[in-house]
Amino acid sequence: MAVESTRWGFLYCPKAGLQNPKKRWDRIALELEKRGIEYDFVQSENSESVERLMKMFINNGYKTIVIVGGDSALNDAVNCLMHEEKRVREEIVLGVIPNGLMNDFARFWEFDEDNDEQTVGWLAQRRVRKIDLGCIRYTNQKQEKCHRYFLNCINVGMIADIMNLRRQTRRLFGSRTLSFITSLFVMLFHRMEYKMRIRINDEVIDRRIMTMCIGNCRGYGQTPNAVPYNGMLDVSVVYNPQVVQLIEGLWLFATGRFLNHRSVHPYRTSEVVVEEAKKALVGIDGRLMKTPVGEYRVTVEQEVINFLIPA
Image (cartoon, rainbow, N blue to C red):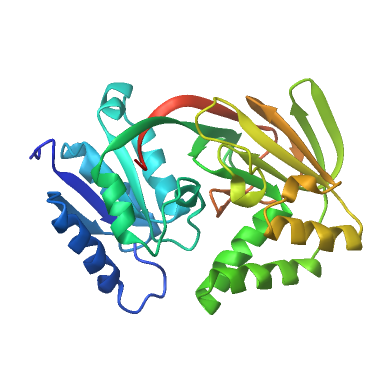
């Protein structure tokens, strides 16, 4: 049964390991009630349930759907929405309240996980902007042609390992900063480089590479100048530095000056073709995905999602 078009749907994704997730939702609900926002709310059981619940909201006619979660939950919601016809997508506005292990896309818009009053206040003003999505098209292990959309970035190589390790250590330590430092420290003793062949614009890169980030947005600090509304992807390719340069690079990465490192080679493009990247792990919006088989292609689709942004 369809609901009123003014009624919002909230998909709450509790953090893994949180002892009392109801407390966080109660704080958000209080702010919604203060502003007279009519809404319905569902809570995901796990990461696999996000797309199912998102589909339920869409099928029941909700026109404003807010994900209370992190980058991975938002990624699942976007991919579910992109399965719909364009006429359906055009009527739906997506929003986010950061509540994940990694909230990089929300932080790009200056949404603060610790300031629900400000976040809900901004959302209540319902300022909508069309945003871009990146898309990776690849072949899986079953030789099936697949694709997946992303809001923030795709990582290929060592940083995909760090993102995966950071997610695990965040559950262990609880602190975002501590988990990040721990992940970087572990990776110092686990250096990797991969033989890659990549086409970016008119250039072919054929050499050993430590990591590559393809950003539709700021890419966890690796594509800090990327924005999800210019129809372009920012790419950072990192060649294998010496140990001293690696430590310097980690410091620049942690302090937001990643592109200043001599081993980082930045590009701006509308398409990246990875012809070869054997054994290099691939992460999409902070979540490890199964390594594609053979060549894969990353492009950008311009202005395909309606998104609630700060006033």
